[in-house]
Image 1 (cartoon, helix red, strand yellow):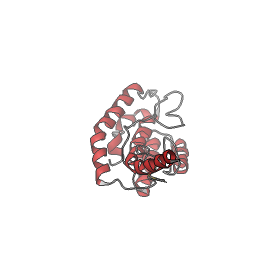
Image 2 (image 1 turned 90 degrees about the horizontal axis):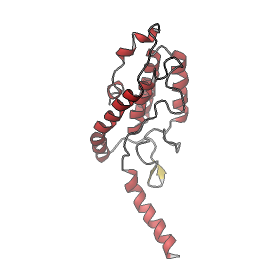
Image 3 (image 1 turned 90 degrees about the vertical axis):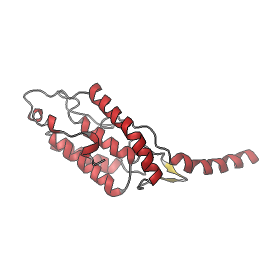
Image 4 (image 1 turned 180 degrees about the vertical axis):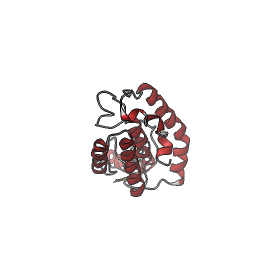
Length: 175
């Protein structure tokens, strides 16, 4: 009987420590959705990767809304207003911090903060230091993702002229 009680006590003590550790940035583009139309399969992937960067860090409810709005505007610039609205509505419904998923708000942090979900939380000074230390590697991962998944826009597409105007992932979200 001592072992299970000791194990439970250890887990309750260890969970808050684990919750404060930021995992390395990872992206899958537009999670559970397409990254572009058939003729240009990565047309708005960069919008979703920038969105992933914001979701990796997490933060307040207002910061999440800003990230979702920025993704919607980015997809609209790729000449896909209907897709932008659908994607926006999907992330608003399914990307909240209380869903135990790999694409939730604040997915870079452990789901639990102690015994409760992390939820909307402004990063502490220590967490901000972790974000700052890990941001160069995150930006490198984004650069590598853009090489592995280049945008191929047909020359006749209206998005062809606007593709070069998209800003970098971090700056488009104010990070």
